[in-house]
Image (cartoon, rainbow, N blue to C red):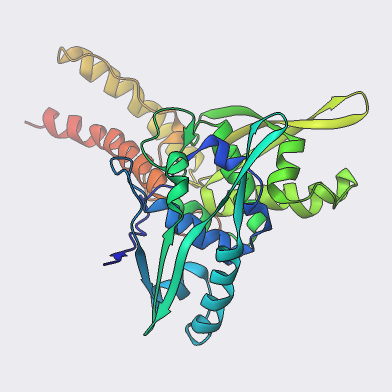
Length: 315
């Protein structure tokens, strides 16, 4: 019996890194790639085989971003793509192996069932090294399959991490690899067109959907761009006023002094720009990601130490 799909915001898309840079999925459209990621996200690392999973028509519509009236037609189109889809793994310099993506897709009485090809377990189950695990939630609201592929590749380069507020992650993206995973090796030949319609578009979507702002500089070999040197920072908009920054700076000093007076080990508190006193709203008004919620929760706990010490002083 097929299992229900778990699409909570904490669910991750865990894959071998070789699958991220493989070709084949670059031929999938937006909804087909999303459903592929939904299927992959259901794999559990403690398991040794794939199971069938099912989505109701309403769940399919929500996850794929389509109208409930168009579910049957869209499900038929998307599953056609996935059943004819494949992944091509480069095993050696002149050797490769191709795998079908799914063993079956079935639509019956308003329920879509599917199962990944069992020959692909080595790329998705019991992974010990060389794997990435971005959040499924990061991909589901994207509007371009190329942006999905680029963020997946970036997460590989970032070791599945996201920058915390006030910190940065530096990494490099190889241009040829990006072209291969986005299916643009023979299109957008002018780098200005590629940046406009593929690269910069992906960076905007990543900022809007993943809470990460990516800045980059081109790496050239001669006159040709061969890679991008990237710096990722959190794009959470905390709207902190100068007055609040001053208050938090004073709070840092008070916390350190109080901890020392009470025989406590001083703890490093966030910088002012890291410490919102009211829950932040993302500039595009999307819900905060799970990681952003965790960051905010930790920051709030630190801020509450001010009130705790004030309370102790009154006792």
